Length: 124
Ligand code: 5GP
Image (cartoon, rainbow, N blue to C red):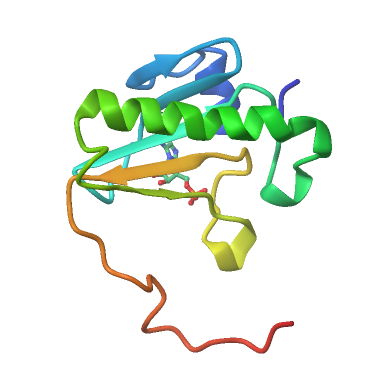
């Protein structure tokens, strides 16, 4: 199932990426514009556009992406020091590629919150 995004082309090996992990369900590769010393994207091979499109039947798949993140953290050696795993959703969440992906960020002590300088909206 393809959604025609740049990540679908990376899955199909139609465009190159620095792949660090692959299995039947997922692919992990280095972000082209890293925001931390380690910045890896972990994506499902199944096309899911946004978090809003995740279905009950995707439970195991979504869990699997976190298992891959934890394995990579062990493998790279930053599991104990810590890291951040983020999935953005739609415009306000900062999503730019509409194929869900975990950002795995590490190698620097990260601040919180990430939106400190932005004016909040009325929600909820
Ligand atoms: P988002 O903004 O959707 O949460 O994250 C998309 C991420 O994909 C960005 O961090 C961006 O740098 C990365 N990205 C966009 N196009 C490519 C590409 O062609 N190759 C790789 N490796 N990363 C990409």
